[in-house]
Image 1 (cartoon, rainbow, N blue to C red):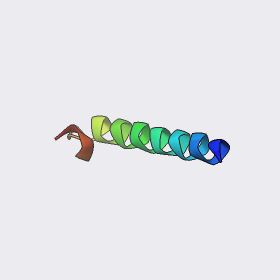
Image 2: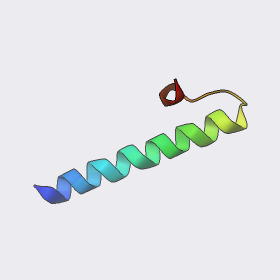
Image 3: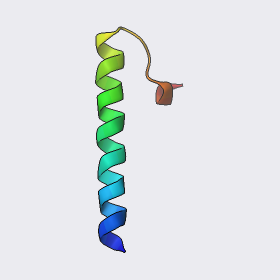
Image 4: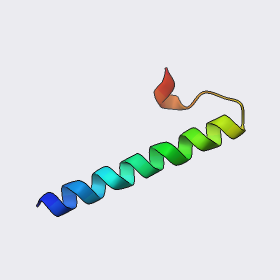
Length: 34
């Protein structure tokens, strides 16, 4: 239902944010920045 949708959206957002932070720390572009 909608709860699962919100949960998966939140997980995706946090994963993207974590990848972005890792990329920033490694001085490289994250995959979604292309």
